[in-house]
Image (cartoon, rainbow, N blue to C red; front, top):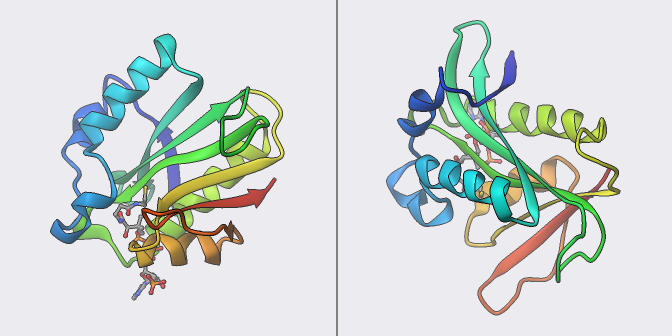
Length: 159
Ligand SMILES: CC(C)(COP(=O)(O)OP(=O)(O)OC[C@H]1O[C@@H](n2cnc3c(N)ncnc32)[C@H](O)[C@@H]1OP(=O)(O)O)[C@@H](O)C(=O)NCCC(=O)NCCS
């Protein structure tokens, strides 16, 4: 069973020690960078971050990282309040075991409770070169938009 547990003083070192596979490095920032971004966003950004460790609850072991964001004002791509999957990663040693899919389902449960405010959409932005991410979001019911000139897409789920 997978649990999302907030990143705290106790577990942030576990979080920054996780890494994706070599060929996935261009698809996601290092977790240390994501946590730094979260800090800056909390003090002055338009998107409120909610960073979580993805845990295998039976083993009490962090296997991944997932960061939800909430944009009360929307942005240029989606001009209405929305939640987003800002980051999702599974450590290279723990991929293809169902953790990413389960973590995304847990995140969907969290946003449906509207913890930071109301919204009708959950979105995720990624490159279509990232076939695994594309399958992950499509399988969870996200509707994938048209790619832009850099082959990036916005995938949107009604919540
Ligand atoms: C995308 C990502 C989070 C998926 O994480 P994951 O934990 O491997 O996800 P899952 O295990 O649920 O599913 C991955 C694949 O393994 C398969 N799988 C799941 N359990 C399996 C099992 N027991 N045996 C064999 N295959 C399995 C799934 O069917 C899926 O296959 P597919 O890619 O062909 O659809 C991971 O690949 C990753 O960290 N990528 C780099 C970061 C990234 O790109 N993030 C997204 C953009 S922010």
